[in-house]
Length: 272
Picture 1 (cartoon, one colour):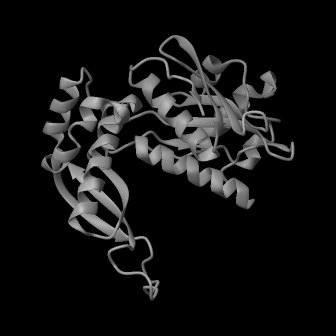
Picture 2 (picture 1 turned 30 degrees about the vertical axis):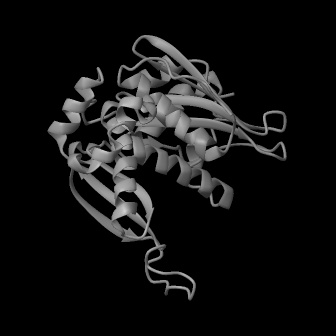
């Protein structure tokens, strides 16, 4: 539990040491998907995946990725795309004997027509959540499979922490909602990522907001159990994910925060 006497000092340090980072407007209308090769069939699949992601990204509402009306447009996704590019995920690595360029994995980046996406959102009863977007400081206390507890920091050298930071960064990039982690020097003021007064932390941090939570391994749930809380819009929101991998847990905290801050309501709990 974060010591209440250290709240102001902790968050003031966070505001001082964490760089400002806001989504650029043009990036909101860009999405990425992993595809096998550069064939037309795989490209069409990538366009469809990117369309789902971009409507969720621009609106801030992650529920749109599963909206049947969006899924129905999969075959027409190319009509929303203004440009695309590929990046070979195995760049610099020669082809294996059994591998052809058709199967080689690529990152497909799609740029979308802003007016068309905005019109699509309007037809779905949504509207764009414009940039700049707020920066989120994530304070998360973790209890791993061996019962060890620690707070996730942005500068620890442990390989496990690096994997978790990578999962958080990928989720934040997908939603265009910047999340940052505190450095170890700041976390010396705390023993885990939970807080009891998010309003106070957010006010002390100025324009930054704070999401606090726990991520605990559960044999019973056959995965991680994540619990999150965010104070925003005059309300304290809580949501959770159970029985998930940590990649899904970090996607859950980012998408939940995006849904709240974009004005799209209470995130649903995720149970697998």
